[in-house]
Image 1 (cartoon, helix red, strand yellow):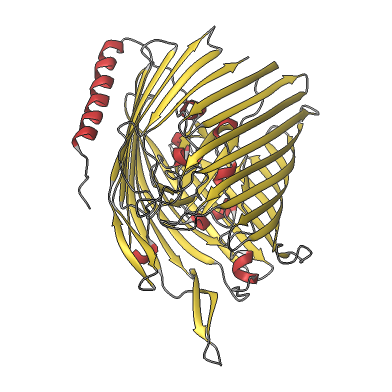
Image 2 (image 1 turned 90 degrees about the vertical axis):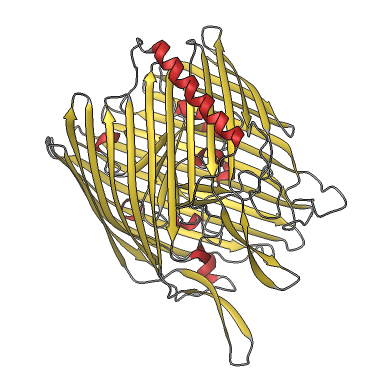
Length: 636
């Protein structure tokens, strides 16, 4: 394990952070603590207290999201233990990659309001996080580990579940927010929501514009490169009708759009543009009969991507999903979930032929799971799923996840958890049907193992430690071979190499008093296939302090350290791939929020990378330095 590299100014920052927290805690130790036992749903699809969950789940609450002025969704996820986001420190609109426990985009499933979303036209069919503004999000749950038994393809390393805001109170309410930041970045968002009788509604919209800076580094050029900016637009509508005491009907629709400039490559300026848009509409009736719930979820998501460059391209996609599920609480200890999920994914390249037919495939997955909750503290979650695909053979997977919560003394309790699960990643439409496609592909497979221990000191202190291992087989790789005429032909294939990924994650949260909290985390990861681990750091460390010296003021300080990373770039002089090391870096972020006018109006500001640390995020591309944001938020 490598030694942490922290320079003097970062040591001073951490020391000041800890000293401030401990000193303030001594002054406030007579104040009572007010916290709530958080509930999570991602790990089982049952609403459970965190203490009863046997999975490694990290939750960003609405309060956490508020204390991050100027940060994007990818910035926030980059601070979660075990996650490395790539591209979030670049120019606005830079393509984002997410690596969770060493997995790539294809290994992590994104849920929006509980429904998987992705882009069927992409090479790995992953969801583009550039579509989502933080202003529309209520909370984010990150479930690490494989859970394809509940969510199907893509959930082999993690599930990121994003819950959008919705109406929660009677009457008419709303919020308006405006912020201005570095690189001429303007963001405005607003929503109106409420409940009246049996009807609830939420209408929200947002707009972000940034002039940005050059995506490619111009340090090797005699002239300055042009700025590369981004525009993001979003509209979201949610309607709910409590038709009867048992029947609830929800309808939602959203339109998301972004336009981003991008350059020609490492150290190469270009006047390119990437335009993306998506529209989704969903219908969710649910019937609650006391001991259980029957729920139908139907969602249609359409998307379009266009690349304006020397090599232009344009893609369209459709994803139709339907899931019918039934939860039932049989007694105080035993509950079940059964259901079936059906998807039809379609995509086509339309620049050369606008009338081209869609390529598509169908997935129909029946699934079932049980949750056993005993008064002794023993909890067991187990599940199975049968993946039936229109291209390859059926795939059976399972999940077994026991945990045990044991009272020790006083408010101190300890939880032991373990899990073993199998998961899969479906070949994408591009990998099956493109010019390089291979219709004989099989899904990528993995087996996940976890073991961990958590300590709880009432609602004041939580400490989690998890060891994990993931064995991956049948990886889909870009390969090639000589044809009968001696020409090299490239195509996608299932590789024969196996990969083992393993690591350790620790995180702690200490509510020192009603007005102060401290959190810290550390993650370490390694693999036996280093060439598949480019851009992924061996370890990351973070520590944060939130202080409220008076009731109307919140101040937070964060420090995050990312270790060295090995990257590979294409050397045009030698026509070969060359490895290089990117140095470790540590960043300090500051945030302050002041509430006035009966706490309805807030003035907030943030400084990210406060010490203007110089580092490289992506080889050959510009990394942003110190950035500042100031804003106003009004709630009515």
